Image (cartoon, rainbow, N blue to C red; front, top):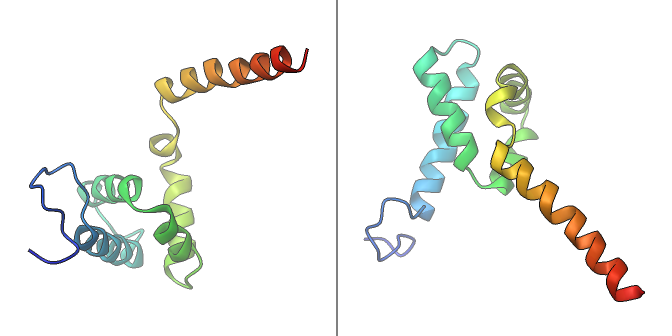
Length: 106
C-alpha cells in the first residue's frame, strides 16, 4: 500500500493514486476525442464527474486537451447538469437563507 492510498479498502474512497490514473485516462481519451466510441464516452463522462475540480480546471487550459474537453462537455451537456435532487435542495435552501437573514435583521 502506498502512502497516498487510504487504509480502508472501501471502493468508494477515492485514493490519490486513483485520481492520478483517472486524470491520465481522461487526458488520454480527450486527446483522441472525437474518435472515441460510445463505451469510451460513457467512461469519460464518469471519470470527469469524479475528477477533482482543480485537475479539470488545469486540464481545460492545455492546448490540445482544453478545446476537446469543452467540445465533449458541450456535446454531452445533459449528463453534466445537476440532478433533480440538487435543484430541489437549492430551491429549498436559498429562500431559507434569505428568510433567515431577514428575520435576524428585523
